[in-house]
Image (tube, rainbow, N blue to C red; front, side):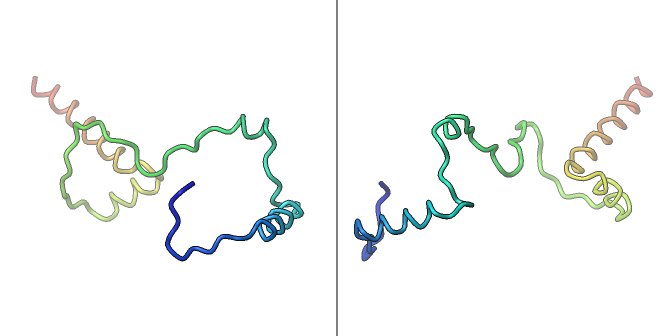
Amino acid sequence: MPTLKKRTILPTAAEDAAITAAAKSDPDAQPLSDPQMAAMRPARGRGRQAGSGSKIQVTMRFDQDIVEAFKRGGDGWQSRINGALREWLVQHQSLKA
């Protein structure tokens, strides 16, 4: 059990039983069955994915319409800009080679 703050007032056994009975009587808040608990899986992590470790952070300025066009595609717009720059680099390096 986690450490409680000082002056935490715990319910008595009777109060705890009344709280549990009230919760169980709510049809929208029924406890999960053992098979349901066994089938549960951890939720996916939230936030951005871990980076590859090979990227560096830079500050750049783009025209507003360019950024808006990439953002209209939804999440991952920065990665799409990175891909567009990589594609440009490949095409232009092959011209020089």
